[in-house]
Every structure is written in C-alpha cells, then in structure tokens.
Length: 246
Ligand code: CDP
Image 1 (cartoon, helix red, strand yellow):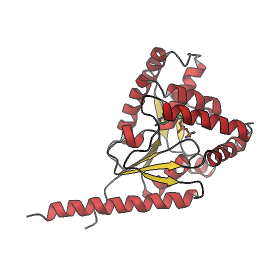
Image 2 (tube, rainbow, N blue to C red):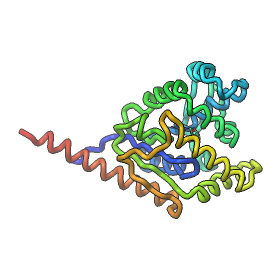
Image 3 (cartoon, rainbow, N blue to C red):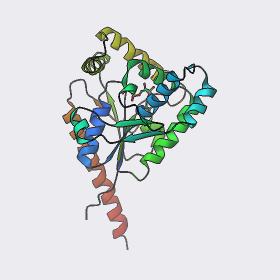
Image 4 (cartoon, rainbow, N blue to C red):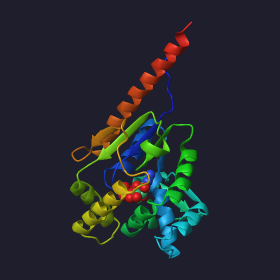
C-alpha cells in the first residue's frame, strides 16, 4: 500500500534564485501549504522602518518582533493570476506590496542578523509548519527551522541571472532601478546573509543543489515534485517493512 505521507519540504537559497515562485508552484502541485519565511523578516523590517527604529538597536528590534503579529494568507484566484504568491498582514493590516521594495529587503537582511529576532520568527515558522504537508522557503529552513525535513532543496543561480529576474520584478511594479543597482543590492544582501554569525545562508549537507540559471520555473518545480514523490515512496516502503515484521 502506498503511504502518502505529508512531507515537509525546505527550499533555501539566495535572492532571485526562484525560491518563491518555485515553492509556490510545488505547493500547488502537491496540494501543500506554502509558507514564505522571508515575508516575516520583511514585515518586521517594514514596521521598524515606519517607527524609525535604528537597525543597530538589537534590544528594541527584538522587543518589536515579540510584539508583532504576522499572518500569511493565500491569495485569491484573481490575485494569483496577477502573480501574487501570498498575502501578508502586519498587526492586522495588509502589507503585501509594501514589503517588496529594495529598501525593505535591505532592512530585512540587517534585521535578520539579530539572534533574538530570529528566535521569535523561527518559533513562529515552526508552529506554522508543524504537521507537515508544507513547502517553506527561506535561508535557514533546512538547517535551523526544519533540520529534519524529508526533502531539502538549495536553489541557486548566477548573481547576474538572479539580479536580472529581480530587476524585471521591480520594473513590472513600476519601481525605477537600473540593472546595476539591483545587482549591487542582491550582492550586498547575499554577502550579509552568507557571512552572518547566526543561521547564515548555507546549503544543508543533505540538501539537493539545483542551479536554476538555465532551468525554468516549471521544470524546477516538477523536478522537486519528482524528488518529493521519491522520498514519499522510500519513507512508505520503510513503514511497510516495519508493519510487515512479525
Ligand atoms: O525574496 P528574496 O529572496 O529577495 O528575499 P526574502 O526571502 O524575502 O528574504 C529577505 C531577507 O530576509 C533575506 O535577505 C534574509 O536576510 C532574511 N531571511 C532570513 O534571514 N531567513 C529566512 N528564513 C528568510 C529570510
């Protein structure tokens, strides 16, 4: 008997590697919940910017994170067609579009170096993903949030390809940035994310590395679904063997 376990799928990687689009698509194909952990860092960053809290003030930012309520909701069918992957609510107010600017991204990556902030958000993410049947994307999902995830993917692509994807996204939203400016932003954030002391962006030893420089969204998503089905079969046959034992 095939056992259809509800897997936990962790997708990590740098900005513009295709994480969000791929993770959303994988979740849709498998009927899983999609969770974007980066949106939580971005939401707290937006609140800190609005309140003009200096990004060096670790104590104030940790307290701010503890007192913040973030909800991630699925978009309506219409919004999904328009390219929206999820809806983000900060203390009850929708901030879906506001958190996607380059300024918020930079602030999020600075905030994300603070251990106390991470502790609060990681606990939230673990709560949201408990029970499996979830695709969560971020920087530390396979290493810290769900180190026992059945399937871990590390998505990567060349910095130029990643910057170009991000530049197109900004342009579609009417944000004026040159490709060079976006490349600089992406590289700066990469460096900070990879070099920080707490939970740096790193491939988990048991993650599958997928380079999306020359791979489309659909191909990448299908590859991950195939890997998930394979993990499911392996886990299922292990359970069957255990059941079969006299
Ligand atoms: O979409 P993009 O890859 O550009 O960024 P994001 O996933 O929205 O994350 C924004 C920032 O939050 C990243 O640059 C990281 O510094 C931080 N982050 C993190 O530290 N850990 C996560 N699990 C997710 C995001």
